[in-house]
Length: 82
Image 1 (cartoon, rainbow, N blue to C red):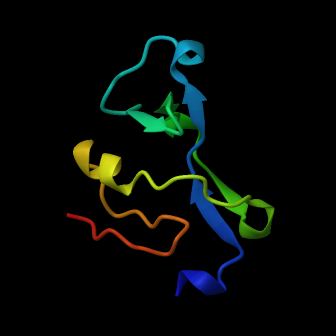
Image 2: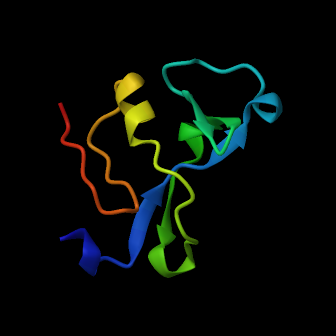
């Protein structure tokens, strides 16, 4: 169903040292390619799918650690909402 849409909802990731103070539940930290990045949830937006680059790493395992559900990674795998 999502494959027919031209947009995806994306949440930017920001380096921990550039983010400042944060509520941990709203802005979890992920390790991607060896660096720690904060999910800047307050900046989520719809992005045209054609403008996205390739996926560099899956964080689906880390999403479960933060109890985040109901997402779809760019690889097409869907995590059911609980």
